[in-house]
Length: 145
Image 1: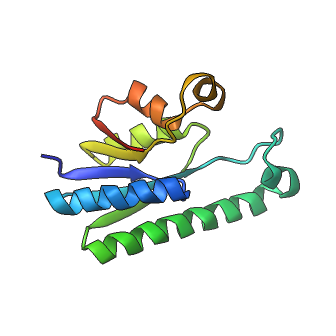
Image 2: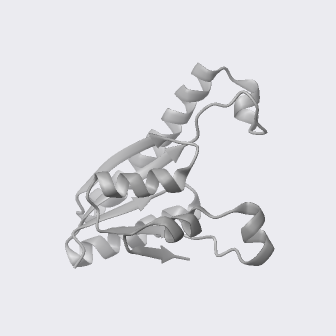
């Protein structure tokens, strides 16, 4: 069965629900977990309000603080369940690539993540990191809706 599960999260309530389910699954099968959060690098040309008002240094400091807070919550949930959990934050323009690369680097054998369940034109317009992971990963992906 699975021994090492990667659980990516953006800290949203949907992702947190998937984190809880992923941790419960890991506990049930005796697997360890690596929790991952990915934050976007600073861009000079963007529509993201944080990047329009902050300097690169201030933005990066806040992004890293947000990533730490997200991972601290996962660590607390894992500790409460007695699941061994490693924490990783990555800066990337393409979260799906960072998710797949981290899973390979950490020798994970399953990726467990949330999906918003968007369909049709909404999925095309908004994109889906989960869909991109499903498309490009050679590892099994467990999707929580």
